[in-house]
Length: 315
Image 1 (spheres, rainbow, N blue to C red):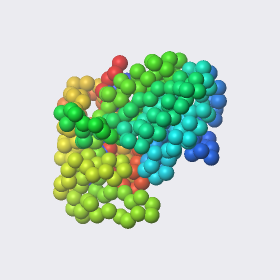
Image 2: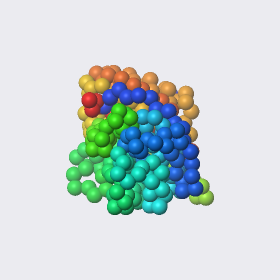
Image 3: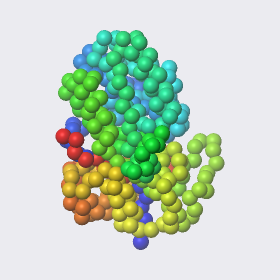
């Protein structure tokens, strides 16, 4: 029996250019594309970020057709308002084409990025913010009715970077770029599984997941998952996750982009074992896989797990 542990993001597909990433760092924990210093005059700037510990997210996605800058907080901690402001000011000017903030749905990120956005508007920098909540395990589907916090932001956020970046690169207005980002955020669903939690530097390892257990639907900051169960084979795990995503996103018969994301401690061999099982399960549901990405896109320190993200067509 082969057991794999992963996060999967499925994105309803739209063809977009491949990113490149060239970045430079400053003392304010920000990174920006040093080869596009005049980009604020040519196109809408994109800025994302959050706590450290998820590398390569988000600084690894800076480049043409993707992010203009990223802001890094401490491990699993939102960046400060001052750092976010410094990042926006490094890529935007008053009266320019403006800046779109792409923010995962966590309280600290929403507060700090939101405050920075309002400050920039007061300075004459056009600014909008899009919240990404792609987790289908918590507050999703029927469970979303009446909830305050909403779905957590996970690895599917990278698909939002991609869509918004393509529209910005094509010369779209701030309103058009924001609309593309919101459409992408609404079209992606993610869910994960892991055999271990991660250990924050200076902290003690958690024993929440037992030796012969796995946790389904956990978060990228060690947040508890939807359920714990005994370790089982990859095909069974994949069926559970895809069924949860399909219940919320309804991907049957559609074209999707697929991401199998390493949470930090999973060998590539096991990622590809999972990818094969996922492809077979989706094909059995008449899902067309237009693109498939396998690797480390948004990690959680050394956690032994993966995310599956699916996104459906927004064309």
